Length: 202
Length: 202
DNA sequence: TTTTTGAGTGAGTTTTTACTCATTATAAAG
DNA sequence: CTTTATAATGAGTAAAAACTCACTCAAAAA
Image (spheres, rainbow over the protein chains, first blue to last red):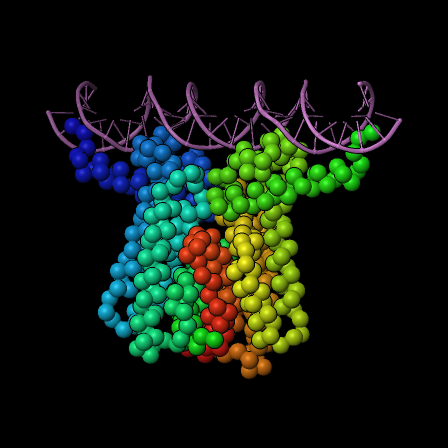
């Protein structure tokens, strides 16, 4: 008889991953609107028909990737709600970001995809709302963490919300620079990234 | 007889500006590929035909906007080549950025457009090369400026190229945050933006 | 009121792109 | 070698988007 359930699943998973990987690269490099499904299929090494067997629309595919990225962000929110020392938490996070950015493209791609999801797209894009929400949570959470650190004397003074905003802006910008500059990109050291935490507000 | 040359030119300029403004907003908010010319014409309050009387293709229109943004960047490169005190130059620049970001969308839009131009688009996009070039010049110029500031004892230690990279990444990220967060965006103070210049490298 | 010139229009054409489906390929088991 | 279940194909279709052009409109001056 035919292949077993597991064998079929294996096959499906393999092509699914090929599609995701190809789509991620293209969406990041060219944006949603400027990427066409033929390209995705070509890069994945499969036919258009097969792509549509896995994803009902191009948008579905994009949404799955964005959803995946969003999940990553939520983990950060959770991390920052811990009772640990704010300085320790920020350091831990910055080092993770640093390592990820030095070792591969995954993190940078995810961050760019999130931005694309916000800046591309049509009409009432429910992604935008979702992302805005997670983003707000992240900023508020980080702001709280920084404030706590300031009260503990770990960080310098300054508007904590602005500091949080600055921090994630920098990380977002770095992700884009990494992809834009390729080999000319050299990830700034963690101490540069965290310097603003130790500077007195004016 | 008909209107004078000047009167016709006036008309043309007026619609040209309407087109540019509409296109800028849409390209920034939705990306090149996801913006269609009908929308641009609608937003500009003109017909498609008239749009095509001013720009041969949608791409031409995009390129003109990007070219305009690029010109702005070149001015910064020039500014940073001055013999003035690096600290003074950086401060001046940061304050300009701060004011622009607080008072309107223009700067943010231009920066996002530059990134779009890099991340959107097809095949051999000569814009990408041009932008990469200007970008490299900007980074190298700023790096040099920072190094000079370090030698003068104005700035703390640290890899000057990484510091320059960090700086522009932050500004780029802030531009995007501004558009994403809208009213929830609160521009970080200049002192937060320049803190990294005064922190010792590890 | 007519003429003149270039702005302005938008239905219609062309081109591109998302998506479908009738058909073929594959490999395990009888 | 046949059967069987599902992966895989890609020419073909439908929809969307870019772009054209024959025409109208507006206002200045004879």
